[in-house]
Length: 145
Ligand SMILES: CC(C)(COP(=O)(O)OP(=O)(O)OC[C@H]1O[C@@H](n2cnc3c(N)ncnc32)[C@H](O)[C@@H]1OP(=O)(O)O)[C@@H](O)C(=O)NCCC(=O)NCCS
Image (tube, rainbow, N blue to C red; front, side):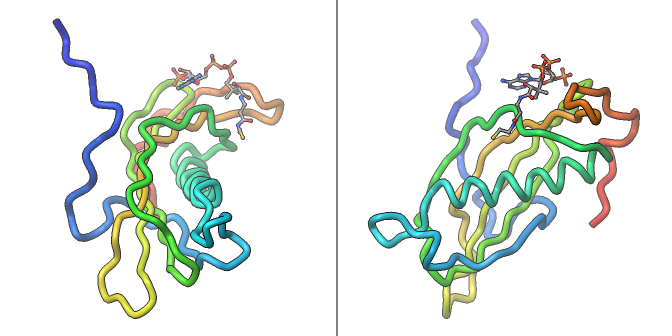
């Protein structure tokens, strides 16, 4: 019998984010849900934007998101939090890559960032017609900021 990988990955227990910083933004009042906290969909879209930036740099191609997996919302985000999205390449396929994304926040008056969400996002390299295209050999091994 083979072990099935856990859907909900254990959190990064480090006190610092893993991976490259992709985007950093401020959670604003317009991004809140009915409870007055930051809407999960807003945070997901920030992660997708950050992951897309990383995917385009990595594949040196236009990319689209094809799948989001193992998404964990671990802590709430509040208005005024500074949100940072960090990316680590975890898989390279023929036309796609999977990127582990972490969102960390620095709350107002806090000195230590905390992990709020993480998940695995898969991006496909596409041509001008929107069809999958092979990632150039070697392209997905080095990323420079
Ligand atoms: C992404 C897209 C171009 C892929 O087209 P396709 O005809 O399904 O392409 P393929 O079946 O050849 O798959 C291409 C790659 O995606 C991967 N893939 C496809 N579906 C996947 C899924 N659900 N999960 C993970 N990977 C997937 C395949 O494994 C393949 O990767 P590989 O070449 O590295 O092995 C097409 O599905 C699409 O345009 N989707 C909409 C994307 C979009 O609009 N995203 C934004 C949503 S808001």
